Length: 156
Image 1 (cartoon, rainbow, N blue to C red):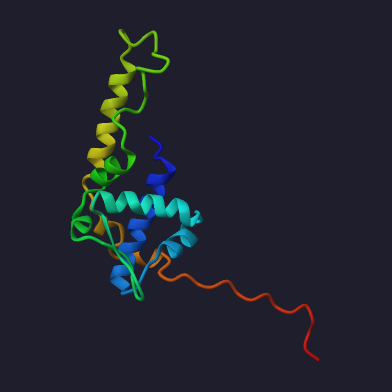
Image 2 (image 1 turned 180 degrees about the vertical axis):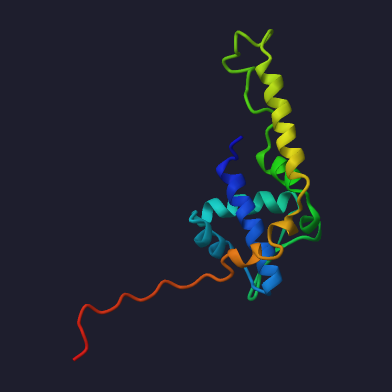
């Protein structure tokens, strides 16, 4: 099962926010966009969805940024991904155009069972599990400004 690009960005944003929370860092849309190699516009759209489903809260103004909500910390990953994906079925047999084999096809049912198993397995973990222990060390905690280009001239 392949997740949509927006779900991928959303999960990365959630992990980044969870890691930042542990480190006491402030995270902005700009910082997430830089770290996940996406445009600020794309990240803004994903963050808006995360706010809508109660995963992220925003703080405006100086010193503001994004933070995980209390509900997000305990949220099951399968639940979060279901909310981000916003689709009921892996394949759309009803169309358009409708599949001519829909009446006798078993694939749709088997794929639905596989998707439920996928989500059930993910539901064993919470957002907090994504950044516990050594996993937290693997997440980049700070956005480093690009280094200034070195001069082509050698010092004399």
